[in-house]
Image (tube, rainbow, N blue to C red; front, side):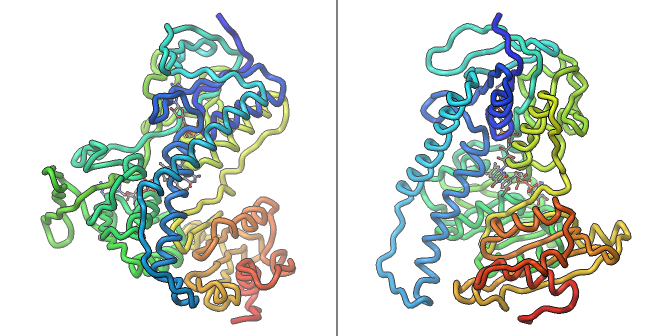
Length: 474
Ligand code: FAD
Ligand code: NAD
């Protein structure tokens, strides 16, 4: 039986990053990954690279360019006639981006001497794994052993019984990233991160998008001021978000999906060409052998871990979407690094309080730390500073003036507690906010930091000045 210092189960951003770091630290390391590409080839990168972050951002970028040329370019004095869309080429480009990046990980494995074992892993206790190989030439099952096991098996779309996914008319996010035609009328169940991002993609491409949200509000972990503003902007772009809509059933015909739902007005029916189900993701422990190995799971199916990502089994760790905390690629990767470094006797750590969130609509939404509601609920005295992009020179030059930066800091110490952005390139701007929180910075620190002119980052500077009621450009 082959044995390793570390075996990582799962080759997504949690698993592959952890495997690389383990190998860099001198451990003999293998990474098991059971995923096959559309062509039936073993592939690394997990949900993020294959069916998540990367393909969705490729389509968000393509559709953004298309919408810009159609609706915005003329405002810049650029007249473009005869704009057409080649959806096959757009999808082909997205697939090539995915292929390039997933192949890149295989290259990184070779460079760092991580052994990639294409196969599905099943735990047999705390140091043995049974591997069922995947790929074209399927070989017999075999056993491997490890001193340490890191589980990074990720998550899968949550099922909604009234809307069973067939990946044709009723799809999950994976199906929605591979449409070959632009649906005329697109229904989406769930106004969460996926609903808004994929709703934006297809709305920009010309679909009429109706988003059915069960709750009376959306994006409940966002600061309310930002969420209210985001709702206005997204509605203006054409996303028809219907709160309090509970889907009770669906019916399929050769041409459409009929959705039965209940809202404030009672029972309704709605016909769409395609329906995306985006009601959250669930931890993936299918086939992992958790029960037989005695691995403890929470009520919601997450692998139970402590603050060091240690499970109840000695020498077995769990990271990323399958463990508690935000289901984000960068959280998974940082946990992977932290576990590797602790195994090597270093001080690896992850601060779940400073994990940034980004929603890649346009304008983008990004935040880190506490919201105003959370601070109020905790009775934490705070000061708030807000600066709108409508007062930013760079935002005007770019023609992107929607949104704001909002900064919250402690009333007594001025330590920054949260930063919330709705605006152009918020995904990049949030990095300064994360660094400030990680360094226990104050709004005064940012107020005294020189920001280049003219940049969008000046809005961060002005929001910091606003905390002390001394904005210069408002
Ligand atoms: P995963 O990436 O899910 O990888 C787990 C891997 O383990 C899978 O490939 C699976 O095949 C493999 N596996 C499972 N069980 C076994 C087993 N027993 N043996 C062998 N292999 C196994 N996050 C962001 O931070 N930014 C974004 O922009 C973003 N966009 C997203 C867009 C979409 C449409 C979706 C669906 C998700 C998005 N996410 C985004 C979330 C992000 O994809 C996940 O948080 C991230 O992939 C989690 O990483 P992971 O390593 O924990 O798991
Ligand atoms: P989500 O939790 O963000 O949103 C799900 C939404 O569906 C919620 O608003 C919820 O109230 C609603 N909902 C639940 N049940 C419903 C029902 N029966 N009918 C109508 N609405 C219902 O989940 P998601 O959008 O599926 O995304 C899953 C996760 O993937 C995210 O939470 C995030 O962790 C990750 N993700 C991240 C990014 C990013 O970082 N940009 C992008 C996509 C996905």
